[in-house]
Image 1 (spheres, rainbow, N blue to C red):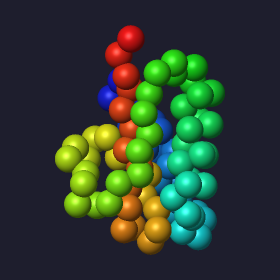
Image 2: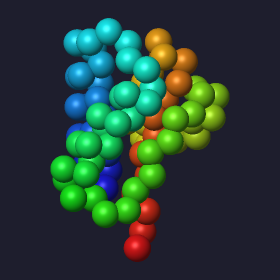
Image 3: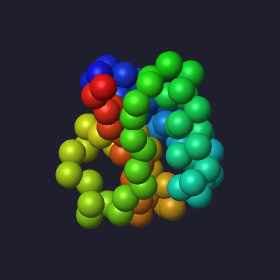
Image 4: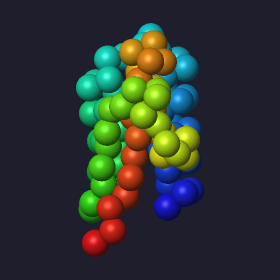
Length: 77
């Protein structure tokens, strides 16, 4: 799971480095599409402020000029 999270994070960071800052909902939708393309059945994506991030390994994107993060968690079935 950590490899997948790193893959998603790498893709998100590469995308955001090349583009202008995106609104959080737009970036979340793009990340969600990539996760669904990997056939992940049960997961949670959440937009949080930087202060709310408890585990940096869960961060898969940054939005609103770095003031918010998108975190990913795979839910166990």
